[in-house]
Length: 278
Image (cartoon, rainbow, N blue to C red):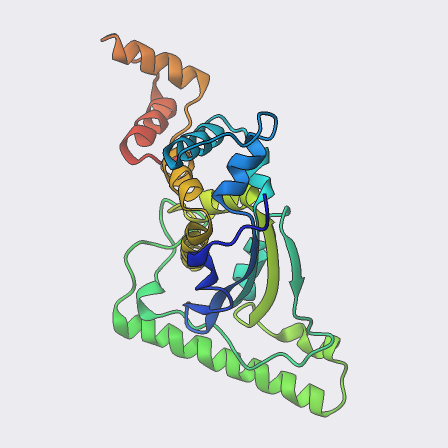
């Protein structure tokens, strides 16, 4: 099969899609498509004559049964701009290949992330690593926004003065905050990209990285619409049960009493209610 050209994907190549206040995502390049997935899966049998519905059914079967190697035949390259604290969450996905702007070679730009009022909230009482769903009143949020901006301004002014006095860039950058924007090229195959999206689209992920994941999901949809539909059905919106929970579910379906108790029962109920994998 020759190089895959997807007209819908060609239309968005190299276009910036805004994220947060100063960030963006660009689809720089892609290799493969839905057709590459089905071709690699059928390589042992030859091309044959397959309909679109059969291709979609095959992709769905592969993803549902975790036959993931055909999805690794599709590769995406993105150019992303984001705050450093988001990038530090991003690089935990180690299967991606990344080239980032260097503060040793370049003077960092005076660009910092300042959250909108609606994104500023107190620490959650039931989530140790997240914020409350309810934002602060506007006057309180604005007070924090001003504090962010003031601290960022002082930090960059100090950085600039150090550079003016001849201090090495690699040392002068030390005090720049995590809200500073960085840029990098990021490449990942579709198998691992779906895993990234599964985690970063989840409601438990931090708001800022979820916003980037949403944009990337729509870019992937342009290249691989059938695979993306299968991902949403079989991965993003699916729930995994433990063996013990499966046994309990069978008993409940048979009209018998649920044997789970305490925290196990609560986790079981939460999975069924919300569809969130805990």
